[in-house]
Length: 469
Image (cartoon, rainbow, N blue to C red; front, side, top):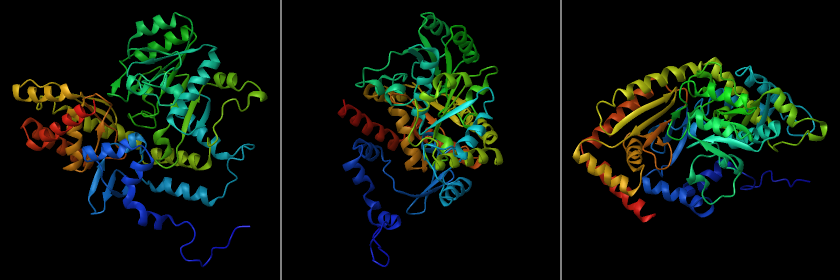
């Protein structure tokens, strides 16, 4: 019997009161009980803000100042924060009191979301729902190995596919892999190198090749024709193509999936997550061909050979269905293409003006801004100072004033890279483009004019980098 706490003042759980009483402790709590290096890093670069609320592509602090979000929670907030359609769907599913996760029935929402997702990839037939991008990749790796009977998976240098042990085995960055060996016996090839791919396939033990159509680290796109040619090579050697669309999918690059930019590419397995969640409930999905699923789940004895405790939960499925409805009703994918083209074009026009700005690349609203060695003597000496301490410090120098002076949240695209990656909510428009370009131009003017504050901060970063060696 549950104790009756009615009328007892101060008893029971009150989230609003808890946040009011303890919210100011957020950084101290994290330092004591979670990853202690995160608050330390945020304090060091001046990112230790206190955001009070968020909506769409903006945050607000306690003083009512707005901050433009050009990071979208690393791509999670595809339809913006707290979209009313997604909020309503979650309220509705909670109010419905569904008999969820009984494990021994078939609820309607997973089937409906799978049906809708597959409509964007009509060459695929079935879906497995997990809880994250790394789970979606893990599922694809397991399914590819079992379906082909082969052990090895190929991946690309500098790839990022997740941080659990299986997905870490196909992660192309040593910084993430160091200290976690032994990993699975998988092999890296350069993005775009068909000869290297064919050499590995010729060994006869490759189950699949997993690839991001546009790499998140550095924002590098597969060369034109590479995905289709890789697919043909793989199928000739009876191996599978896995497209990791965890970040690029659900409209990010101006098509629903990034592989669809290249005609004739039909991956055997596709991994989806991030934006499908609506920013509320973690969800991952692995889409695949019928024969692959039927090999994995080949009998009733194998019905639970691969499962996830919270996979297909009603809240996640409702969020996913609501997100896909928003994408269609509000023409979000077309907006990502149009706004991304505008932003990329305006930024690319600045490369001739600023010698530190070397390249602007990407598709849709996945854009990389790369900095490089300047030509003038004064800037070259300052650049050399930063590079000697730690590669990537100049990009961090740009990120900080964008937040501190212009209230725009961005971040570098990877460790030791002089690249800022823009992955804003897909709902931004010309107003946000204007605000970002104006702010970025001001920061570049400061950097090229020898602005004291910017380079003073650079010296602070150099001292910090040297101290951490």
